[in-house]
Structures are given as C-alpha cells and as structure tokens.
Length: 411
Image (cartoon, rainbow, N blue to C red; front, side, top):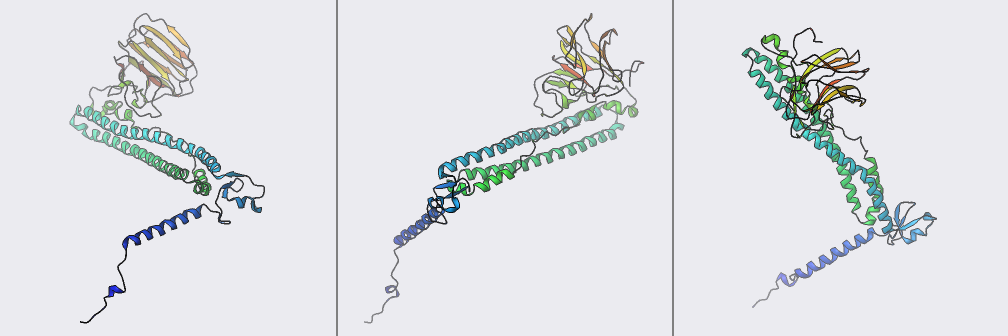
C-alpha cells in the first residue's frame, strides 16, 4: 500500500491562544516604552523631574548641572505644574466671565426677538380692528399701514438676527478657547507643561471684546403705527375722528403698567415679562410719551379720574430737568428734577389736568381743566428734550384726552 505525506506535516496548526498572548504582550511593551520615552530627557535619557523657571521647560537632574542651566532656578515638576495650572486658571477667568455676560445678553436678545414678533402680531390685530370700523374705501390705507409695519418688523428682526448671530460667533469662539484650555489643564504634568506656552498664548491671543450691549431702538415703534391712526386718515374719511396730542410709548413702560391698545391710557397691573430694552423705565413705575419736546409751546390734558395715587408731568431721560405733580390719597405735591418738593394746596379734588410747556420760556405749568385754577408752575432753563411722563399706582386708568379745537390750543 503506498504512503504519501500531507502538506500539514510541514505546516502544523497554530496555537491561537499563544499567538494572541504574544501579540498582547508585544503591544503592551511597545506602549509602555512609548509612554516612558515621553517623560525622559531628549538629551540625557533621564526622567524629567525638574522644571527650569528661567527656560520655562521640564529638565532632568543632569540638565540642572549643565552649563546651559548655570545659576538657573528649578522647581520639582509637580510644584511647577501646580503653579502654572493656577496661573493659567486665573488667565481663563476673564474669558469665562465674558462668556457668561455674552450668554446673558444673548438670552435677553432672544427674548427681544420673540417680543418683536408678539408686538408685530398684536399691532397688526389692533390695526385691523380699527380699520374694520372704517368704510370700505379705507382698505387701501389699511394695507399701506400693515405694509409699513411688516417692513419695520423685517428690518428690526434682521438687525436682531444679526446681533444674535454675532453673539453666537463670539460665544462659540470663547467656548472653543475655554474648552481647549481646560483640556490642557486636565493633561498630565509633563504634557501640560510642554504645551503650557501654547496654551497661554492661545488664551492671551483671544481678545477680551467690549461687553455686549442691547440694541437701542430694537423694538417695533408701536406708537408710530397706532398713534393718532384715525386722525392721520381724517382727510379721507371726513367723519368723527380725534387727535390725542400725546401717545404713550409702550417700549418705555414699566413692566407693572398696563397701556390701553390705543396707547392713551395707563393703569397698574400684574408685572409683565418684557424685554430689558434700554428705553424701558425699570426703576420706577412710569411710562413716557412717544415724542419729546425741545422747543416751542405744547399743551395736553389728562383725566386722572378717581385714581388715588398718580404722578403727572414732564421729564428728560436723564431725570435732571422738568417737573411733576403727584397725588397720594388726597395729598398733592410738586417735585422738580432737582428733587425740590412742594406741598400743594388744592381746594377741589383734581379730575382733569392741563399740562402746558413753554420750553423756550422755561416754564412748565399745571392747571385744573374743570375750574381753570392754577395748580403749580416750574421755572427753569431747559436744555434737554422733555417727555410727557405718567405714573399710576391704581387699577383705575389715567387717560390722555383728545385735542379740542379752541383758541387755547398750542401747536
């Protein structure tokens, strides 16, 4: 019977368990050798145990005694790493503070952007309600008003979108720098110190930009769209219309003041969630008129009605000029921008008050519209633009009265 050798005689089967163990051992040895080499001095193959304060780099004990490090100062590697970590952490704090401020301002910008949309919707609704009361031929005027509102909404939303995008870019840049630096801070001592200069340079090269600011005039100019709306189209309808000489600006109203939809009356109510725009009065519960005066003579009438606590007058936005009269539970007072307070003697409870400003003459006077009795007059030289100002601590509304055609009106 013949006999032949199989090829397996010369190529016996491999032991896979032994093969895997060998490969794992070799891999671990290579990794250990590689990791160890990183902690060794490239010149003397000694372990890096010291840090040269003059050269700002890790060195070995042989380097310490070499000529190149003569008379240099050294620290143990762990002490140097801790000191430099603390130093880099201090450098990182202004960036973190700046990031927090950017995020806060962006949050308010997000709220402002949402409020713009709410204002646009509410204003459109109010415009439509007024136009629905007019004759059909006013349809074209309605469309023109809404088009103007849409244009302003688009423009101001675009400005706010660009502001938000800019804040996002700054936040991303600051976040990237902070994230990269914090990764360096978590690194091993030697690796951290080897990359320390680059980390410091990266932090220092990130400029601390000026603090972000809210966009002034960002909100929809509601007063422009709604104020005196029917009077502005009076020559087209020739019917009963009225013109109110002062329109309240909701963008200046304290969050606890509620304005009527036609922006001519104000009452106290629950605090509203409103954007912190620069124009808004936040410290005291007042609202300003939409237009200020820096010349000429101007008059406007206010019905305080049965409100028990109110303030009425004119001030500049710095609150240093102008004057106001007030009522609190039947006690009347006058106060100027210089904080001078005068107790007023009023014989009859005031219901309707006329405010008269002679800007060039430096006089701001108040009179009882029902009796024509003089209440008080402020005299000073005005240099700032004065705005009508109303405060109401009562749920009963205070209302600005329509203009009437008589010889006493001033333009």
